[in-house]
Length: 355
Image 1 (tube, rainbow, N blue to C red):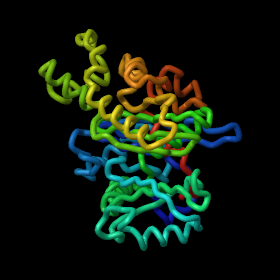
Image 2 (tube, one colour; image 1 turned 90 degrees about the vertical axis):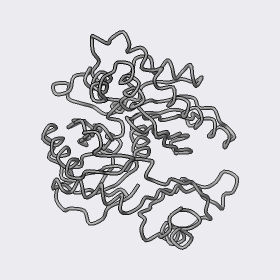
Image 3 (cartoon, rainbow, N blue to C red; image 1 turned 45 degrees about the vertical axis):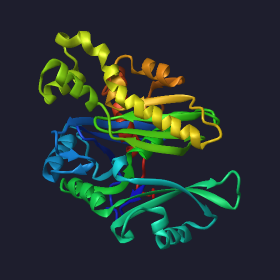
């Protein structure tokens, strides 16, 4: 959603880097005459405390992990697209009279107090997307505004550029998820799809109708709910509980079916979000949930969502329309990484000329 100008000349190779609170992922795609092909993918674990509340606490530690990510992936891209976590970004949908983009930008700046809850617009990076005209008033247009404090944006840029790379675009994780959805899925225009990405400490919700975002919310709960429950149940450290959750363990195989039950607080907030969305629109029915993130691999999560939210649900597949070399990536590996790669794929699909 945010663009960093003065791009490096030369190579146009781009890598998408999804920076989570516990894992960072890299995705690089190649464009061919036959469509996109996965070129590189890697993920590395991030020590607890490097990122907290969406803010970088240790830039050097994050830079070291990003260097490790490039080494593991053997990716040579110099240009990076990354994303801010949704809870450090203000996202607002508003109506405006029809006008050109430049005029709209000036208008938002002049009337910043009405649209952005920041004391000083000079301390803020913002961008917007014109969705189209309002249904009930053709003279008005719907606009999504996204804004974040400059010091937060610059903090992410600084950590990445310490590795010798260049950030070309700063996106928002829930919008990157939408980009991956648009590339890979072709639902009916009347379908209302909920993109639900359950990460370690945050759950992104982006409800899409006719390929336009109509509702976003970020919940400060995620897979750490499972880790904390396991830590208490098994009387182990947080790190040990995290490894049991992620990698499984034959010793604790009998409790893996309980993992979904540990997500009850997350499901409760997702339900509240769906209820609020339904109260604001004339056609409130959500037809399908696409679930991604680390928790998407939990046995039984899709069935639990179907039962809880009374709609269809499936695992988000960001490689549905993206090819891969089976000599490099096995089909089983692609299936395993798909849910955690969704945001990264959305970032890698961006182009340097995007705004």
